[in-house]
Image (cartoon, chains in turn blue, purple, orange, yellow):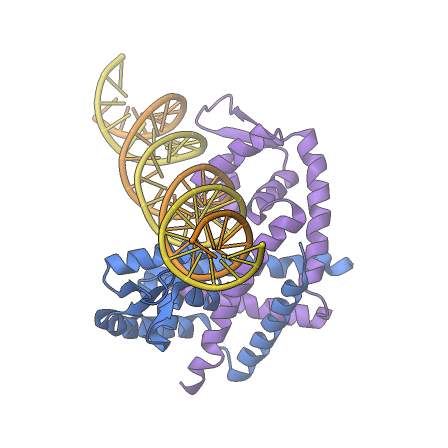
Length: 144
Length: 144
DNA sequence: TTAAATCGTTTGACGGGTCAATCATTGACT
DNA sequence: AGTCAATGATTGACCCGTCAAACGATTTAA
């Protein structure tokens, strides 16, 4: 009750601010957006995967996935082809060039993460992670 | 080093997920977006304010502020007028209707926050808030 | 076998954010 | 006074996300 104006609201606000401040810096430092890098990471782990399968791994709309992949195709980081025995599916795959570039992105990302979590002990990190997980669960339970 | 794949990366990922999952739910539950509500909150605290002054309080682009205010004006939640002695400025002010509506939004927001932080003790909340502040500071230090 | 339902993908319209260019107004300088 | 710079607001182009509608391909059912 009485703390609703001190910490409670503040935390939501902070989560928001962190996101808004971190996203653009991440993009500048690493040279790629978080969403797109996440997409590439998933592609890195597999050989070839259909778009919907990929979409389910990442938390973004299938429309957005299509658009990302189109642009990545233009940049020749991925190739796409129809699944031979079921033309509804399109398979996506990293190009050699793509695989190489990802390594560089990963490195930038690691550096970035290190800066964000500077001065956090391992213990603090797990503690924070646990709390964030609890928040995530709470959010999941909220129904519209 | 060795924990870079366990917690470190996970935390950034979580912060992202929380934002992406929370924002749409917030909007559905409260009936207004976080940014717009923040704008209204600032307006609530003052009588009349110029757009740039408002923009500096909130962490969004002045172009976005202009667009928000135009829409809020259409909905008759705010009024805008040129500053008499310096026509470059436009002053913004809540309408009576606007002030009343905000009360309702606040209530919805409080409820929402309660759900997000369910089962968090007061101590845990301050602990979390402190850590988030540290992260914010770290982010601020990062230069492009 | 044809009609309907389903599935994966794509597209269009929209909301909301950024940056860069522009406009009107005002202030400062000569 | 007249020019030039600074300031606040606006606009246009773009990125990235959503939803809903459409489209082709395939499967199901009559």
